Length: 87
Image 1: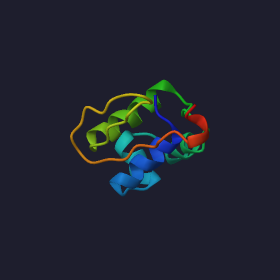
Image 2: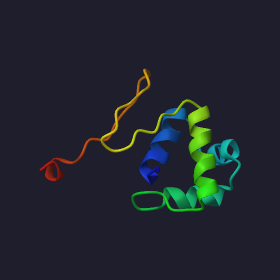
Image 3: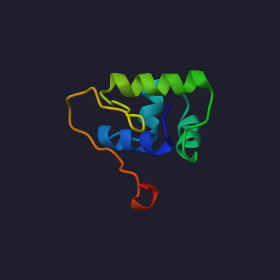
């Protein structure tokens, strides 16, 4: 659904901290901290994950899954697969 790196990158693009994201999503700061400390895909309560993804969407963030095409027309960044994994 969303990776910890995507959450951190989304906050950076919006220029907000963990507290502000928690307020936008209606979750606690420790929830954001725990999710951002995850390895790979974020683990947590589905309701909390949904709230965060919806809050990021409302704020203008488009989350792009691996090998997915971006439907938006705005500027953004995408993490490339490391060269040693491109085989």
